[in-house]
Image (tube, helix red, strand yellow):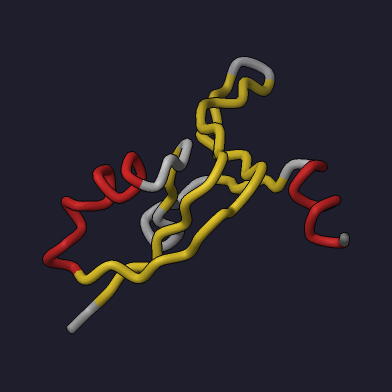
Length: 79
């Protein structure tokens, strides 16, 4: 059975504007949990996020744009 890794935590997504060009990106402030979801249960990701009081989620294998880690994330990583 195939799965997808899903990150839950605090992320911001949007477009960076650089000289008039837009670049989709996500900024990761905190990863609280990483869960492998079976493909037939991917529709339950939103429910899981709400039930566990997470701010957002990201499926890294599906995100084809820039990923940035905030200073807060890096500080907590090194603590």
